[in-house]
Length: 326
Image (cartoon, rainbow, N blue to C red; front, side):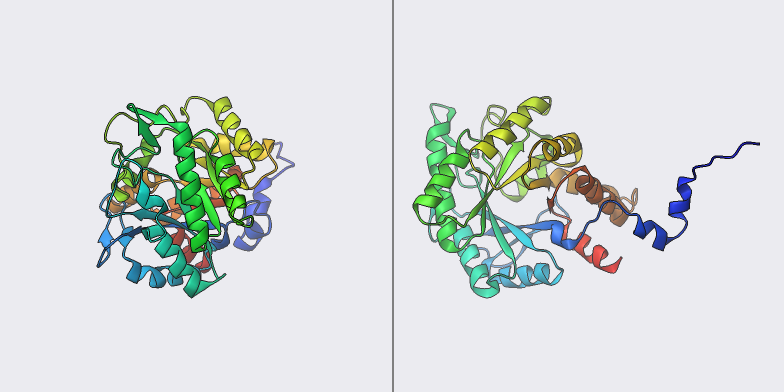
């Protein structure tokens, strides 16, 4: 009888051996934790479509960031829910806006203990729920990028480390970089949602942030999920405009694009494991159909294996706990 000369199972014989040859590493330092902060809120509000996620009042922000930092997570991503919305999204760049107050408060209390990132978009702040300014029932790209630049500068003045434009407007990175530099914020970095796809995986987020469009959809500015080459052109364009970190969004159904971005471009690559990915796992876990910890670990490792240097994920806190325990 002939036996195989090569036995790959020799490298799997014990936990110590498996750890020794492990190719993909994941630590809490790789995770970015999203935070929803709501203006004029008195107590936390559960987000029904995203189990264990909450909208926070400013008064609870220090405790939340402290918990995140203690878990070894390096960065947070702030999303704001304002009290007032209008056609121009003016509360998004108000120096006393909810995100600006949150940034300032975190900076004062945590200094450099955690990287403060903030979403730069208009969907939570406009009465239309769209990511740009509406003009004659269409998204006006050029007036939108002017507003996005104002948002970025206002966040920089509050003390943000990284602005993260997610509106998918053409030229948004150029406009933001110029505005930041003109105001002396040359050290504020840009992590663009470079290839943000038109996806049904965003539905729970729209509930959480109250940002569903009031008419139409976002097909005219988000990348079609059918077009890989177009996604790479979006990434390349952001790099040419001076972005510091590129992002692929969503993550799990777009691992091929994460890998291709890593292969093609010599820049840090982020992936956003979005609300729908989180909600599906939490829902199946609640029914007892899957083991949540095991599935979460597998998903996050697959995103890292594909090439992501960092992962924005709603699993950040729970994942950091089990990574510390392992």
